[in-house]
Length: 594
Ligand SMILES: Nc1ncnc2c1ncn2[C@@H]1O[C@H](COP(=O)(O)OP(=O)(O)OP(=O)(O)O)[C@@H](O)[C@H]1O
Image (cartoon, rainbow, N blue to C red; front, top):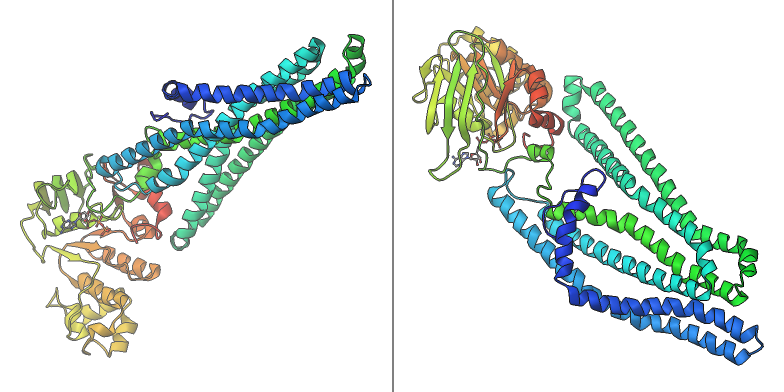
């Protein structure tokens, strides 16, 4: 039961894989199975006795004028019903011998898998493990118990009832068996397509829910980028898919209900219609009553329970076994979308295409960097080429290495391996005249506004400062502070105002390369767009760790770091090539990039 299981579209693949380990599991518990069979035989005897005693109470008792014999046979039937209680108790006691070992095995398997994933997996901690250890294992145990109970009960009760019918008169079987078997066959034929329909409906529902959640989370960017109508079209398609899947499921549910009707009610109808024919073959009134008792008391309830259990508990058991024990319960897309846990990212091995231009503004050749000798590399063999004047956006989950990349380009970090070149020269340390890095936490010092703005460009004159103030939309703020010559109180500024001042300072910097590390995260989307456009207009190259989708859309190219490989290209190109980027465009503002 604990080996790899994966439920395919119709569940048959999972059944094939579950088969051998299930047989091994049961073979190791022969004693429990034998004791269960003994209790179940008692159940079959009880089913047999009830109909048989009713038939004889009529034929040999009340209709024969012997009331005492009739009452005695009725007492025998009653004894059969009363005996059911200890039989059920015995069955439940033995059942624990099957279900508890199954639960223990599943718990062991779930713990092993989540430890393995935490230590060696691509996404770090497995947060779904708690659900698998508690909820899903309990569902598997309950579903398994329900299946064993009903399957066993159906087989033995049906055997007892059919034997009873045979003993009353073989002609009764001729009437009852065809509709019973026909309905059962129809029901079994619905199992596969219904499982497939259930799976499809579930997937369509999840896709629709996911789409709605992503759209809600990214409303601001959708509005800013004008991609709302596209999202609505996608949503309409998903709604249509979900509706069609739900219709298919309802269709199969109708067929299943029909099967239950055929197997559950047609035998009674057939028996009623065939009464004259049966009487002609010597079937007595008592035997007819006994036959109705078998149908109403034993056969049909057992059949009903079996069909319900196979349909619901069986499907649940397959799905849960698949998630708890399957070879990889995390779908590829989800795993890619999962933010890589801090410190575990090991990005690109794929060479990033070289941009145009003779001497690249930035060039990384097989750059590898780890924070510590035994730590996994944050960047691993990364190649990158940024053309002069290009505007590049860097995106990826939190902790993947975006800031590390910018620090390497800025020269505040040196690679363990490979080479970083700016404007054709190897980066050997900080060179503010060559490149300016603006971090997320903007630095504003106690001095005049003008001194703050001109910090990287002491030669800037009044006109340059005014131009920077206008370009970055700082006029209102500077007026509020009291003009360019007024003293700034850093504590009196909001984080967004501090960022605006730092961006204006970067705007005035003579460095041909500007590196923004989430430097606009405290600005609203409109202010961020204005600032990025102003910085992109200035002569030079701009590399931005993108905080919002709109920021990536504005760039000439986007570099996606995803812990496995880097993908670089225009927004449309990376949308087509990077599943992670597609995912991030949905999660933006709700995910780790915020
Ligand atoms: N000085 C450091 N010492 C040790 N580990 C570090 C250091 N700086 C960063 N890291 C680790 O390196 C990995 C990459 O960090 P980095 O800041 O480059 O990621 P990021 O993609 O910029 O993330 P975020 O978007 O959250 O800022 C993370 O796992 C981080 O914990």
